[in-house]
Image (cartoon, rainbow, N blue to C red; front, top):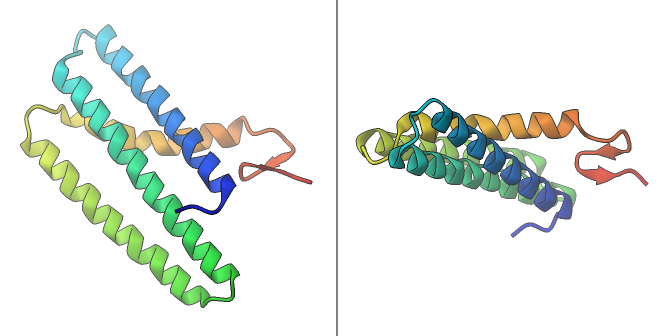
Length: 139
């Protein structure tokens, strides 16, 4: 699936960050006295969807980069990434429309983890050591 070890490490770091931020979200709900089973299920659903969305992005970009690097057409690689982004957006929209229809999940708790991917990436870049670049050590 992924041939790039840096991409795999990046995905697992982001997934761990999303999990930590989701746990923090649930803690805030508990402190506010709003914690419930729908909140827990919504947060878990949102965490799973956001991690799967990031995994799909990682796989698509990694494959496109591999194809372009191996002498493939860079325009086809770019088109594959763009097509994947549209498909991922449609899948996300369908998933969250179902969340709004399905009352067993809290919609806010389900939507918040989508933001956690970007926060995790930003935090990883902020705390990145000087010798690291894009998840790998410089020689």
